[in-house]
Length: 257
Image 1 (spheres, rainbow, N blue to C red):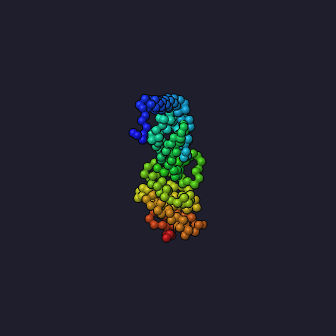
Image 2 (cartoon, rainbow, N blue to C red):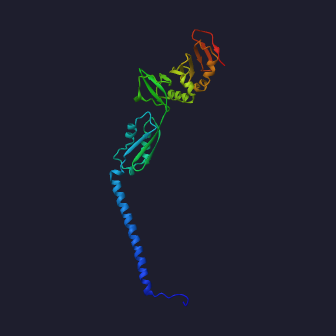
């Protein structure tokens, strides 16, 4: 202890007391801060500031914004802290034309609903009305229109069921230019083929086909008509092979390679 300096205990006590006081003050400040944060949080959750102020809907075409919001059960009185994205998505999935949805919260009080709907593939004609047909084979009975749809095949004698689903699957796989060349598709089942269809093309030709091989054979339609005289219209039979029969001909058939 010769080289060091001896500090009396009496001299150290004031410093220890000061350190303890500072620590106590820091603890008090932290506790008060946490208390006020908790009070502010409670006040926020109970105030209008915590309620949903804006609901934004994106990606919808079949359904209006109001229909989507109504199905989601969200309102301007909904507490944003009680919003459960998965529950809302499950509710929207209950709409037959909604394929999927994603709900996100944009703080402080905005909800964004991104909707992905089933695509419209064709229209079914019933009486004087046209009804959209979705990619899942559902007919939108509440979306009827008297206006002839542009660039969409019109289906006749089709009802919801196996034949319509097969028809939609076939159309989905075809190139857009071929779909745009189709004017009407009639469901014309026979005793030997319950899946027989008759197509009327925009270029004046008629096609006889079966749903079982419709999409595969219709892919070759541009190649088939390139071999025919455009001035001589007739029926192109794609049921078994590929045959052409002019409307004025009764017996003679021409095989198309």
